[in-house]
Length: 504
Ligand code: G6P
Image (cartoon, rainbow, N blue to C red; front, side, top):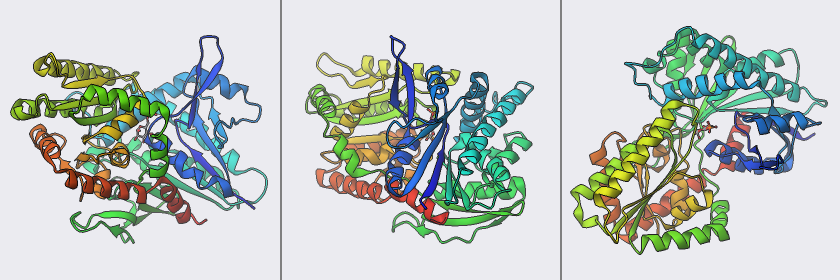
């Protein structure tokens, strides 16, 4: 009997939009989690029956969810079941709890003098988050309890769904089915002292929720270890740190790269905690970059660069991505190293994200303003130092990576970061990677990237200078090494390793 694999995530692999004539169009879901899971599942679908459960994110998604007779649509080989969660519940769970609270805690983003305020207003937000999580647990339990006696493997994704493993376990416990629950946390994990910002019962519920899983995965050992620290400090759980993790190559300080880092026993159940770094599917990415749309952008961007060296960044306009300090470092480079003026161009692609959260709208304005200041300060009649694009354009982003001499990825904190890996895979001349040491990817790429403290603008400007001045041979060597590491941790391996841990 074929294995049954259920994936659950807030955003699914497809979302819908109403066209002007009222018809529905499907669009590929964005973000690293979606692309990694989609690519990883491609290796699983030939021998397993997969269903992906996600939330309906918009009115168009809800219209599709209501139209479905069978409960699922099948846009790209994987049946997708969209949960029609009432909009006000969804909004509170997604925007107020997941994005404005959990994301901020784990990326250490709060301006703690003023935020957060866990007052009366938080209670309905938390209630909504419980209701939203229950909708996922109900749907997963229903899918897992279908006819037959196949093995069921459930892969719950991301911080939105932290409560789901425990809720699901409670729903499954009555059955004797061979069902195992995996959970993956895609963002950083906060240290206990910062995690304590959360109201005690909330912080405990989130940890307990994840500990309902049989296996919990993180992209980097730092995040997995911080999770274990919180389990011990906040829950008083029994944490065994004996693992079988592999450590990085020389030069990475012996850091753990992949493997088990410990086990947590809590409420009579043991959860294995492990590191599974996510890389990229290099062959698929390179094949995509051969597309006519990408080639057309390569030609246009190449003309705009006019033979100058290109510094590229591609991010969602996301507070944690640190775009403002990245631009400030570029400004400092031009101010302190006048030799680069006229010889370099910065392509900054900063795509819209979570505009329902006020801080994101403000941040986007700061990015625009600083970009404008740089252009006014240094631009000349025949040299534009900076092109900022805020409209999402995937083929154009790939084209920029193909042309990059330097790639800047300087997040304040980041679970992994796939752009840091996609850039070197795609770059034709080989690109030097300026990488924040606070990105999960720093653990796998430390030996070949130029690591920076994301708060240190001068250090970042120095690294940009070093990257621009690097010899072609050195740049190509480092870029090829990063591309090889990224390919080694390809999503098929990322997902396959987790399924193996759940017992295939
Ligand atoms: C980033 C994180 C992912 C997360 C996604 C959600 O990409 O790395 O772990 O799933 O954000 O983004 P969304 O646009 O759905 O809020």
